[in-house]
Length: 338
Image 1 (cartoon, rainbow, N blue to C red):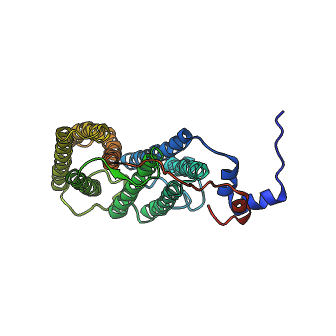
Image 2 (cartoon, helix red, strand yellow):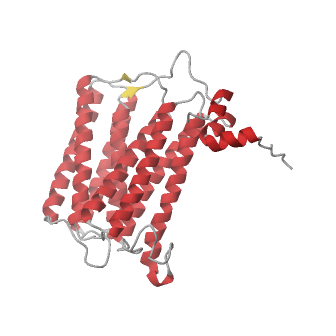
Image 3 (cartoon, rainbow, N blue to C red):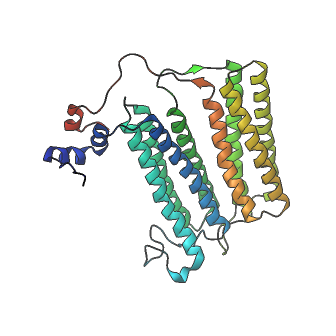
């Protein structure tokens, strides 16, 4: 039998006052553990987008017609609500899985030695975005799947993916000052690519808001726009992103840039090709739900790919000189940091 050490009263007070500092003083995760925790948060941020799309594509958006309860009288779905209630309530429950993944990332980042405050802040940023999006998701239900709130819900999810991607990348770097690996002109080209990608995602939400998949079998308000016109604009923006990516890859090869930026650009180009094929097939086959769901997954992967290209343009070495070593007794007793 393993002996479990008894907590002293001082330990209990310190744990209650600052649990993150208490854990950090007693556990030091390996760098690989921190990377896995950040990756888990990133994966779940994509999963929640895909499952949210499944809710809409199956017409289950109002499977739980109210929020935060599923019905006025029940916190959970009931048998009378059928499969739509199960799908909508299941997606709500996945939010707790996402919170657990983000929480693990926060704890692992806080406990890493030497302490990296930037990683912890990125973890907390994800937490607050998740909380904000949970509230916004409730508003989406309460206003009957208004397409503008649905679009905002997706855009905030894209912001979560962005923060999670940055945190995952930062776990694989040091905390030294960033050093550019390419010239200014290449960096400017990448920022054009980022801007075009943001516009592509935003217009994609308008395509969704004006398209036929309203999210529920009842009459749901649509954006008063011509769906085919918006879809063609979306396609033009997609081609702009593809062209910028190919141009970037060509430039990086021409200037003999380091391997990392070129590899990430190649990865993005391949993702874009797959996403483009899915997009055109779904357009010409009257938007089958499976392909629309795959296109939503592809949207998240494209966004991650674009951000990885941006982050690959610089390197951050490990800090040299004195570093802060957390976990001293003074921090545990004060309990004012964390």
